[in-house]
Image (tube, rainbow, N blue to C red; front, side, top):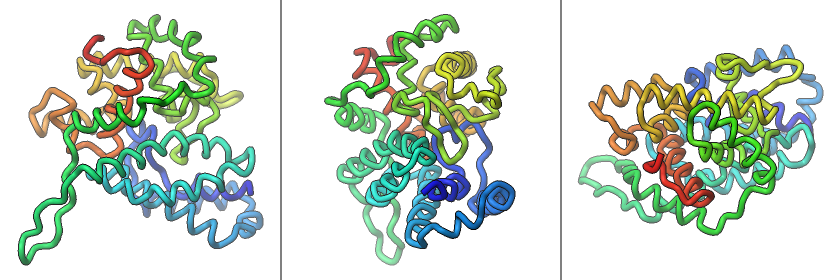
Length: 306
């Protein structure tokens, strides 16, 4: 089933690493995907895919593309069953396994969105007006739900092999060594993880970001090497913290992009993550509280302590 994920990989650009590239419309992505397919894929093999599998995989990607970048967090809850159905397709072969690892690291988003849906009351329907979307929960509510989600979560199986090894690389860059736990959020500490957008490795670096911080992408791709990718991620986090002077904002920029964050801060005349959180892309709204919950669970620390 090698072609299952080749179809998936070119279907659209989404999620983790989104902030490290420019946003594209779905039509843009699909046009680029068609060109890529014609240049790189064995189309005869592609035809061997069942129509049901193609439809299921492509629909999930379209929905993720849309809902991760929309403003409303609870919309992600609707993807829970589809994501769980697609995951086994990606686990069938070595070729698709990197994408399965990526998708597994994203499953918490849809699970938490489902919980937030239950505790977020719908807005009052005004006579003669269409229903309004459910409002985004405040950042503090999201933090509480994420802490509960991870309360009994053991270390990722591969984390022990990397945490002690990579912490000194973060310290060398003069940032808190405990930020190494960002790899749990990005890839569940599996360096093989690869997103459909092209983000790769423990810290899900996009190609342009990797190059920006000195990594090679060919022979071999250093994003898949723990030490080089950790060093690049730490350098990027240091740059973001130097720019925004706050770790929550730095993490939001790592996910959503420096420009996106700067524009929102300016538009709302704000200086904190919590002040702009409801206006960020849905994924980013949950990305920062998720990392905070991981940090608390693994190190017993809060970002305010840095």
